[in-house]
Image 1 (cartoon, helix red, strand yellow):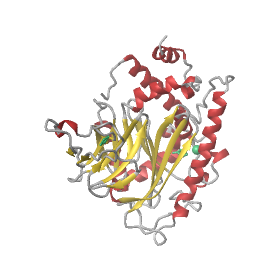
Image 2 (cartoon, helix red, strand yellow):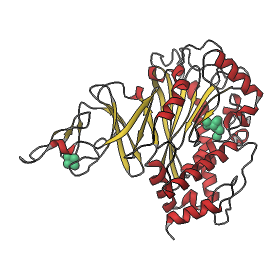
Image 3 (cartoon, rainbow, N blue to C red):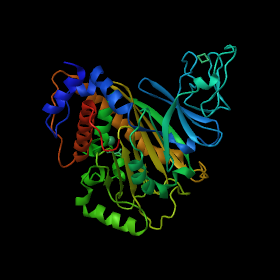
Image 4 (cartoon, rainbow, N blue to C red):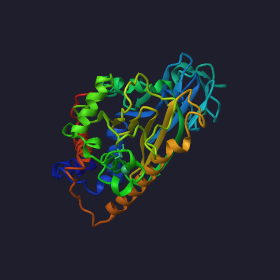
Length: 410
Ligand code: 3BY
Ligand code: FES
Ligand code: FE
């Protein structure tokens, strides 16, 4: 039986509402199927366009086997390329971020224009045609301050993502932002465990004392049954009346969602006091005091919290069958000054603590799953509706991909 058939058989046999079999969380061959069918084919959040402020600004990342560079070209267009030289393949940019007038390979100095064209290659002979050796481009889309790339030759249609998330993000002006602080952690757990943990707040009371000061444990806030919660309904009505798109929306395949959720009591931000962390707000046109948090996820690479005063984005990247990298960025208005308009410590304290708590939970979850005694267990329908949604999305999506079925977005 091939690995593909083994995975398909597991989808056939799986008990809905239960966690997955062990292989999904640790087997290197299953991990490879995840890479090939999800990570190498879907739109992935890579960073914010404010991180590429001028021509020549670039950022790099590694998605599975693929090194990628995202760069703003001379016309200010954001482009993405395979970060692999067309001479003998060396990685070109190795810094996480930087600025370069041209992209110069460190090995033999082949020099590329910011739009990927090969400009210069020393002593390659009269027959050498530089036009044939430009950097290989990736599909790249920018929406409301978010940059997405796809490694697929024929990517999924980005239009449905754009149509849903643009109006929700627009009031938060991520295009006018700067990254005030960022942090990357590695969780020793499969990427799906990172997501399962993110999609529920069943664990919050036990693990997140700082976050629980402001973020509601009510299952509707994190999960998929917000419609049943009168407080959330009331919040949507108030926010939408004030011109802020707020209602829960999820795409037909379940891959991305937007919703604006209330915070607890008088809280307006993720601080220990619940008070705003930034006096010069990021969001604009907000005429009501409590807008809560706009939650956006897009599987498999990002979840986000948009507040009135600042925003927090999270990027997930798989590093191995049992290793996942999570990068968190705190965004403020580009003119906000540290020490004057905000204190970094006040703004970052809650999520630095929360991320570390989540890392520990995920690592313990992974260790327990690695035990041969592990068997899939039942999710709480009350608190873990979001996890059930994620796992159903994953299984359905992979099943269709492995069978070569057309997905509606394609
Ligand atoms: O990190 C998140 O986005 C979710 C919601 C709050 C905590 N966690 C369950
Ligand atoms: Fe890049 Fe030789 S590998 S110049
Ligand atoms: Fe958590």
